[in-house]
Length: 399
Image 1 (cartoon, rainbow, N blue to C red):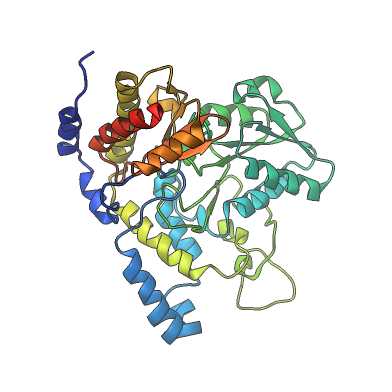
Image 2 (image 1 turned 90 degrees about the vertical axis):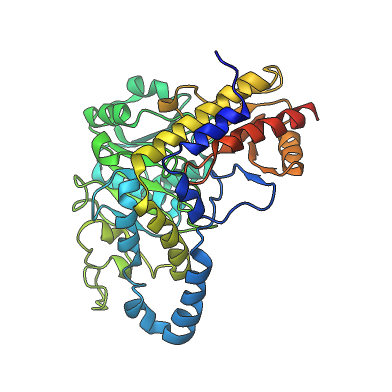
């Protein structure tokens, strides 16, 4: 295999069909490389002015009138429709609301109620901890149902039985970056008569996701990672057409009422996915997230996600080429179709390596016991950034 050079990376940048999207985001501070898209994505350049307008014109001048005149009250559904193409969902299937954990709680309760005669929700021991906390809380509320954790998602086929109500998994493992085969798992789940529910927090905006084509029943995800909605951005939830009209709302709130301005003393759920809304939308968070979703609407998603696969594969090739394998071992899948938005390596001293990288102006994340993660967004990452990262990584590994 030909030895890669920085010039090779520069040629890839020159031929990048989605390179112009980089200009839609604030550039990194001088000399810094940001590989934390799996924690907080870059800020859209439109965000400061639009946030200022929301504060000065919206909050200061319009006040309550902003709910109608600036579209605040309809933002959960409007933003959901803007997000839907990014996750392979159709119109009126997705709403932006609440946090990922709250949405998990809502969907697990709703899904379990769809299968009242079944008592098991299956997940895996490697799932993101807060996902498991939320699921367990939901099942505690219902009573008589329990969470069963698999040692590996590969064991799912033999674990499914007539008592399985829900299969709840993260699409991408938050440590290793392994991406599960959503379509295959959905087929197994449906054949067993159970409901599938996915957390897309580490895949939405990072890799191609096609909820409808894969037969996904329910999904949630956050807005602040690869979607670039800002720190603590609102989350989203998706309900397939199969369950949109029949799955009950878990928390009955005025936003999910069929006639929210009637102020009736009895609750009548709205039609479709809007019944899963609860309270007043977080307007400022919605404004920031919509700045990012407007960029996503203009992106050519096919080439964009292809770039994401290629640029992460390039990073793996460069680590193989430049780094001592005894000092940095690739733990993410090498096959792009099995990998999410970050590349993970195992090192002897993950916190120390991350600290030394930050001292060399590289922002990344580490996870116990030995993982360093590089979250790479195809929206604004460059191929030459991979070269520069590996140069600094080598120095950080030496200590």
